[in-house]
Amino acid sequence: MTAALFALALASSPGLNAAQLQQVQAFSPEAVIPGWLPSGFKAHELSFYDDEEPGTTFEFRQPGVDKSLIVQTASGGIGDVMLMSETGDDVPVERRVKAQSKLLGKIEFETGRFDSRRYSAMNWVDRKSGQLRFVSAMGAGVEAATFKRFVESLKRAGS
Image (tube, rainbow, N blue to C red; front, side, top):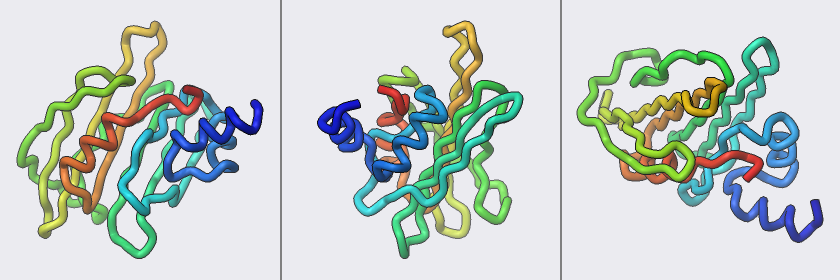
């Protein structure tokens, strides 16, 4: 990849530095990354699973602020992400929000509050490609409109 193309790819991959983006693309160009993040959010933790069902978990946070956005991908079942707090408490669903993603198509996510903190969760399964692929996303401490913009921006690392 030329320096100009690499710079262009990096510019469209917020929250990831050049080394992190290269690591994600080397593991799997099919991994899902955000095309948009709220100002100040950066990669907090990148996890790669290379076992029977390879997958990834990428967590983005704003340093010093208790807010997070997470996206998971897997080629096998990762199970549904439930609307839960960081302490494992069930979060009552206040509403379901419809969204439209270039990558995922029509999607819907759940959002609710627990102890005055907003949580959101989304699950998606690709059944059309002939190979099962799962994408899940979670948000903690971010408003539903922010989470919606995050999930609508999701894209493949290799695109």
